Image (cartoon, rainbow over all chains, first blue to last red; front, side, top):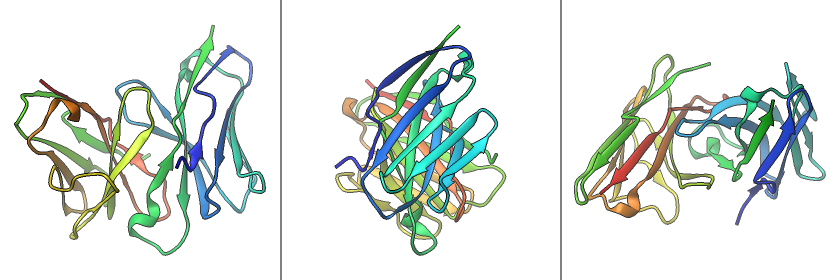
Length: 117
Length: 114
């Protein structure tokens, strides 16, 4: 059962344009969402996150939008740059008591973003 | 951001041997570390949750006797793949985090069993 879904395995955009990466989730217990960027043969690096009490979080060129009613979030990158080309993973975490396995992340399958010069 | 170091970054071993992978949090104390496995073109699959000073919690379908996890200190967790076979070849990644922070990942270990 895929609780976090990234339905687009790949996305190609032109340099300077906006990249929009989408993510859907099914578990209503998720209350914290994160986006990670991953290059081949490397571990993921944290990009941006959003708590379920917010609907938008912005950090430089990266903005994450959360629509709780639709159980949908998206990552916007603008303007896109060739160095942004990577696999982007959406991840979600359940709330609850502190510590232990409540902090484990559930990942989507990732979307390969290619930004063409 | 915080630094998590994973070692080795790649390893080739013979079938039937054991391989140990280390995960260290370099600038913070990680009460919880996670071990993931990634197959080509697939997502990161959580294998187990490692809490300092206690036994690891394994995800369904992960053999605890095959993937031994030790979290002996707040900065070090190890994953030992015992009696490795070619089907264990994969990309293994650890992450470390403190409560209410994002997870920081190691650079991953490419294991090839021949």
